Length: 249
Length: 361
Ligand SMILES: Cc1ncc(C[n+]2csc(CCOP(=O)(O)OP(=O)(O)O)c2C)c(N)n1
Image (tube, rainbow over all chains, first blue to last red; front, side, top):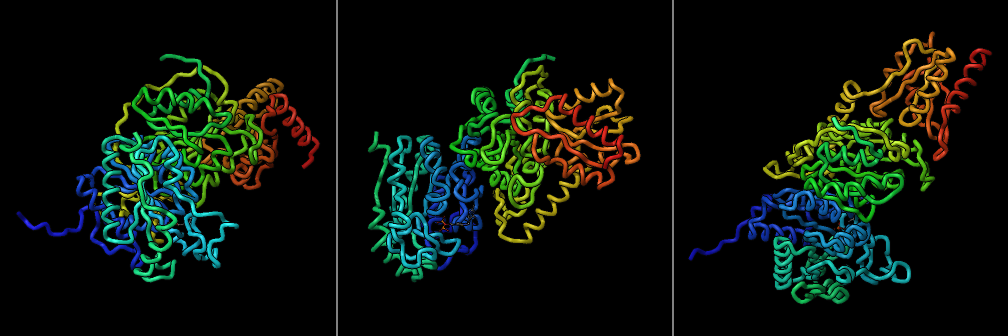
């Protein structure tokens, strides 16, 4: 037997990512690229990227990409998939993109049960624009527009997207995972794999939320930010399966 | 060839299918609902897809996604919805994607009045979104012309990898007239679109990146210069206008769409009374047929009466620019839903005529 050496996935370009040190976006890019290679999907894939730090993945992925305007990736993916059903289509979205400006697009894409995969990278903040309040910022968490911390009396509570989407009937797979540790990253990859397989089987809409960090805008080192995730983010946003088609049917 | 009796909106929808349109997304709004309704039935028959979107914003972004796969796609709406689409239209232009947008105009601003109007001339020709892009804007004045220009809009969009706009007032959308439809074009998905983005593809490899997100200002400048050259070319090659009774005209009506039809009736009546009046009807509103106005002889033409279903007049800016103060430009306007009659137009013309005779400036 040959020893399986680790190789850079073909679905990733040979380039250092533009992500800040310690940011988990690069990790998500890698998981997606590894899976596309494993499925042999690189040449069939159209990735729909958001506006946000996810846009920078345009420089990392080595397959066809369509960059949407802020929040509209699920609508763009709908147009792509309806016109090219033979292609494998996923969106990659941050929490400002998906849960604020694009709330309508994600809910209706899910409700139509579009046969696409949505990858939701929830870092509880607007990363790209420099750390403003996001719909997912935790109560008490500081942002540049809530310097005293999120006050629910003024801006309400963080929005739980898996819980919201799993209220709809059409979605087939709605799960939340975290990127805080190696075992959880492996779990995240398995969830993505399942979501990809669903699309290949024509099963419809799959949604994978990945809890992530933002060392730069949280003002923490990488290890501190992962600790903070475990102590805060993962308490409010429980990891789990909210809709799993086998379980649901 | 078979002649059919069709409603403007439905004729546009069928013309789109025959021109190769295989994707439509839209959101209901008066007075264009027959377009999505028709296409919801028709597109699946030809292997196309129809989606009723949750908003105009979503609809234009679905069109963006479809266009990215090399599909000819269309959306339609009226003023309030076109405003919502403007971010998406700008993105289509930025990413160099072809698509056709149909605006069946009602009156505005705001939600306005739903009756037919020509309220969106400035939006259509100046800024259907941010960033300083342009679109070819076609303005039909009959159901047959709506069919022909819809086909042309698709041809130009595909040729230029740029959105194009069909701008009609609610009258043309709602009226029924005999039409001859073009044959059904054979469609094939030619390529992945987004030519500009491809040449700037960061990987430089075999993958396609469709984007209006250009991280480098020098890339943006390359694309802006290419676009500027394209707009210049349109001005040389794509301008369309109709000149009616212009050979000996001393008085000129400038009007497009339904206003031009009303004006023609008035002109025929006045011609019977011996008044030398003619019509210049822009068919492309952008590029504007400035030449037709610039050629007018100020010693012969006493005035131009810009006639529009909009208060205040909007096309008048382009007419004035074209004649650069050499000829007096007046207006005859009505607001949304209040149809201009041929009597209104001839009365306005006669008033101006009598002023000319009295030497009133
Ligand atoms: C219409 C529009 N509004 C605002 C912006 C500015 N903008 C760019 S990225 C961004 C926030 C991104 O935050 P998020 O979606 O949470 O992703 P992250 O960067 O944290 O990964 C905003 C508001 C924009 N580009 N377009």
